[in-house]
Image (cartoon, rainbow, N blue to C red; front, side, top):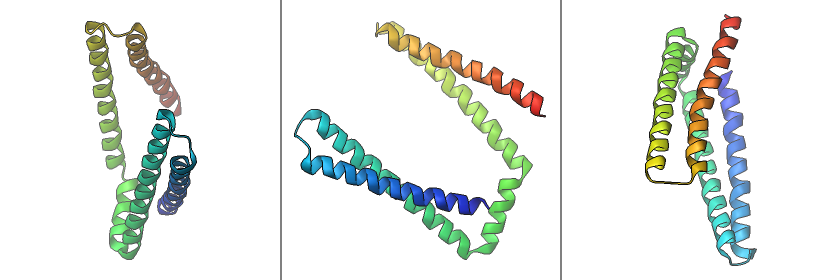
Length: 145
């Protein structure tokens, strides 16, 4: 069942969050007082709390689903429904296209603002890589189906 996998993932996320939070607090208390260590501490603390809250939220949702078998059954049917799967895939493809063109717009802005050339080249590389992946995956799925 997908719910059991989600539950394991959320538990792992909580454990990961606790570990990262602990590392952040140790750096904050015992680490030397420098700009880099302060940033590392803040990063670990933020990531830790974020992972803990995300995992606990997921576990809470799973708990609510287990108490309501009708809702659980409805969600399972929706997950397996071909129409919903098609809609999700179509939405992901469209959002990928939108983000891809936003990357190009940002590259143009970087060119106009005379930013370092590596920034512009990185953005253009991301744009090109998206289309390379699209061709590779289209060929792979054409063979599969």
